[in-house]
Structures are given as structure tokens and as C-alpha cells.
Image (tube, rainbow over the protein chains, first blue to last red):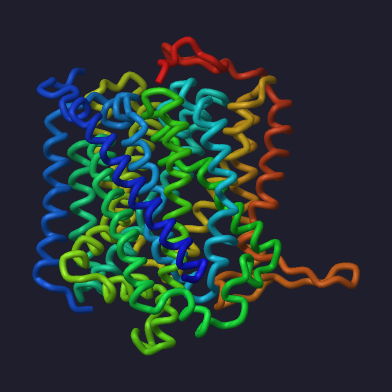
Length: 44
Length: 506
């Protein structure tokens, strides 16, 4: 395998892995985010 | 381009989902601080998603891949990575300073350090920079290439989707839709490029068909042009969208960590779009792709060819996501500049939260409409965007950094003269090179060639920052000798010093 091929595979794994890990952490925080301030009335 | 019904359905679900999220977040009934900067409560994961998807728009997806298609690996090593040092500085030094001082917007920094006039000038420059003209134009072009739609109609329909959820939910809606968009952008590219590599025969095939210099790290670019391109990374140091996310962070560690993780994502993303462009060029050379394929469309055409049905729909949704995540962020920034940085100080100093949210929404609609009008008015939209980015950097970079880091006296005139001198020098430089130089179709710019002391020199329009930033600094130094020092008024909990006790520990 060409060195550039290997580099491309590594970068693809980094990008996909980062996206999935970050999304998993986002889901951990999401409940608090989505429920934050719910049912509140806007105040002046 | 042939797209299956399943792929269309996936794109439709994506668009409906974006509006649904916006409507759900609308029910949060936010205050102005919630609407604009998410109540200063964003954590690292959501900051990474919104930073990465906002700052990496279609200009990177198609611009970098186009350079990769035409010039090879220089797109990655020469154009993209030289800017990363500036991003690193933004992560390690700027994030802490910005978060501690509890600013609300970029012009707010100028107003606090130099008074209202500089804030107004900064707001105007920020609004012009943030108009979503280029993104809407690109969105229309994608609709035309992907779906065969009229570009203006495509930009109108999909741009309205982005406008709708931005209006409904403010920064929370922008950030949460950015999160979905970030995952789509990354996964589709990470799957599509290896499949494309396999389809084209890998980089051995690229090397067989590549022109000379295709694998030279820094290609044949003139050194000054390379420095000028690297200097475009400076724009993140004045980018209103970047600042908004720093202000929205729960604390500076969340902001710093998000920037550092984003750097890793950006490096991987940059290489994959470069590789996509190079592999597409090989596809043209081998006859797999049409010989008349435009280099701008190369990545889109090549990846859709390599992906199976179903994944094409997800990839196309990812491409739309790339454009929409930029449109939503900058229209919100421009709307806030209109309401918080212009309307509030000039017309309604005691505006209530409800009034500010309403004025911001009006500003968002105005910014979107102006961006849409400009998108189909100018032929050289990329050149227009480069000019507005250069103008914003020249106007606000020096006064903002001296405001944040210079401990000595700062007068109202220092801010005004620095902003005006920076902006004025860019306009004079651009017009001067345009008048004296000649148009270069290859680089899409003007170049003035002249002889001095027997030596021949070239001045490109892209070199404007080399002149405007020193001029802006001179403006600051002269103005700082005029009038008494400006007295800052800090909001509750804000601090200008390091290790603020108000910072929460991550």
C-alpha cells in the first residue's frame, strides 16, 4: 500500500472516530441542553 | 448526476429534521443571552461540533478539493496547515481572555475598550463580513448540480430552511443542528474518500497520472503568496462566529479543549478533501469521470460515483449541512450586530430582553435577505468574500488585540483611528492595485508589477494585510495620544485579569 493511502486511511479513521466520540459525549450532555429553560416564559 | 428515490428521501428527512429541531428549541422561550450566546453554558462536545461545522464551509469542501485537483498535496501542506499555528494560538491564549471578560459580541470588545464609536465601526464591518452571500450562492450551485434545480430557487428554498430554525431557536438551534451536520459532514467524508480511493486504484494510480510537482509539499507557489494564504488563517482571530462560540462556552477550559479537538478534526478533514480532489483528477485522466468535469465539482461528482445508494443521500445531506451550518451561524451573528451593537446603543439603550430578541430576529431576516440579493448580483463572489475578510481583519484585529493585551492607556481616538486607518488602507490598496495592475485569471486577482532600483517586484491584492495592519497600528499610536483614557465599564462577573475567580472549573 502506498504511504499516501495509509495516511488517507488514518485520517479517515481519525475523522470518523472523532465524530462518533464527540457525538457520544454530546448525547451525554444533550438531555440537560434540551430540557434547559423548557416551559419558561420569556421575561422582560 | 443520478440520484435514487432513497437518496432524495434521506435528504428530505434531513431537512425536515432541521426544522423540527428548531421548533422544539423554540419552546425553550429563551432570553436574549440564551438566544444569542446559549446562556454561556455550552460544553466541549457541542462547541467542537459548532466550531468545526461553522468554520469549515463549502469554501473548504470545494475550494481545497479544487486546489488538490489542480495542484496536488500543496492544498494540504501549503494552503491549509500553515494556518493551524494561528488556530493553536486562538485555543491556548485567546479563548481564556475572551471567556473571562464576559463579552457578548465582537464589537462589544471594541466598545468596552475604546467607547461607542469604535464599537459601531466594528459592528458595520462584522455585518458586512457575516452576510451569507457566498454560502447561499454555493448552496444554489449545489442544488443545480445535485438536483438540476434553478440555483436561485434552490438557494431560496434551502436557505429558508436554515433561516427558519435560526429564527426559531437562536444559537441553541444553530449549535444542535450544527452537531447533526458535523456528524454527517465527517462520517460521509470519512467513508466516501476511502471508497473513492479504492475505486480509482489508490495513490499509485494518482502518481501514474499526476503532473510534475503534484506531490511537492509546497508546490511552486511564490513564497509571499504562500505567506499571504497562511495569513488568511488570521481571520479566525477576528471571526465573529468564532468569538460568539467562545462567549457561549461554559468556561474557558471548555472553549480551549473544543478548539484543540477541532484542530485535529480540521487536519483530518483538510487531508480528506485534498485527497478527494487528487483522486477525482485521476478519475478524469483514466476516463472514469467526464473529461470536461469542472474542478469545483470534482469532489461532489467523484464521491457520489464511489458511494452506494443510500450513502449518496447521506453524503448529499452532509454537503447541504456544510453550507447550512455556515449560513445559520453568520446570519445570527449579523442579526445580533444589528440589534445589540447598532440598534441598542444608538436607539434603545434600555431595551428589554424581549425587545432585543425581537430586534435580533429582524436583523437575522435582513442579513439573510441582503446576503441572498448579493449572492446573485456579483460575478466574482469569492473575491468579494476575500475582500470583506481582509477588510474586517484590517479594521478590528489591531484594536481588539491591543485592547485585550495592552495594559497601558487606551483612548477613544486610538480605537477610532486604528479601525478607520486599517479599513481605509485596505480600500486604497485594493483600488490602487486594481488600477495599476492587471487581472490574473489563473489566481482570480489583480497583480501590479513594478521595477525599483533595477529589481522587479509584484504586488498582489492578497498582500493587503502586510500594509493595512501596520497602518492600523500607526493609527492606534497616533490616536492614543489624543484625549483622556477611556474608562471601561465591566459587566457583573467580568474580569480582565487572568485566573478570574468567577471561572467555573471544568
